Image (cartoon, rainbow, N blue to C red; front, side, top):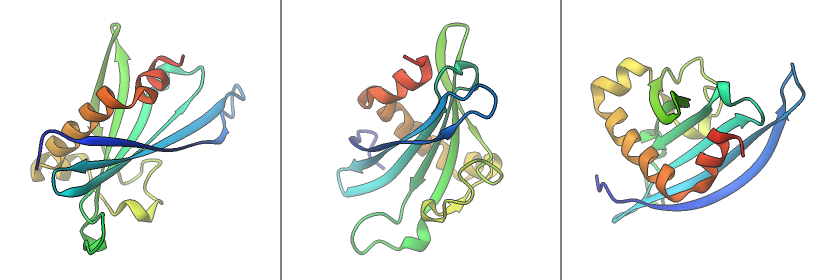
Length: 144
């Protein structure tokens, strides 16, 4: 795995509204390429005006690109939050997350599976690249 990724921003959409306050819930997506071609896709969702909820991120790795084995896709779920004024993220269980019914993302990894298999480390490399190269993540996290 290459630690340097190229990020291509994908679509953005309003996917609903908060049941409590009515503010919009938005999703944005993107593509991740390494030196060998397509490596992963990411999706982020957040509710406007709810910074306390952070940003839910799914990173689906492997199985992308022409000729790739689609059955190899594995999805790591990440939760982004601002704590004590600083952004940070952690791996959470993908099964049971908002992403679990998005079959295109592949097999949903538990936090334990992601950490023990090394996929969490790869997902953190991807999420760092997204943080540095897709300004929508910082805007969503800071609800600006």
